[in-house]
Length: 75
Image (cartoon, rainbow, N blue to C red; front, top):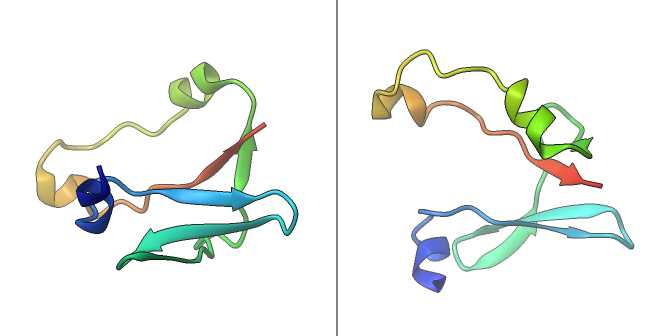
């Protein structure tokens, strides 16, 4: 499974509840994660989150991988 993370096939972020910091796994270690929006959104209902997600304009791999995927904190 480590191969998935080190090759960035699957992205992983972790949350430290004491410092309220997030870290992103990149190049074999966890680095501080700073979201582009400046804040991390939270949600309580995963179904509502999925229903309100913006639809992809195309499923072409070039277009699909350009999107900056948001990170959410599940409460």
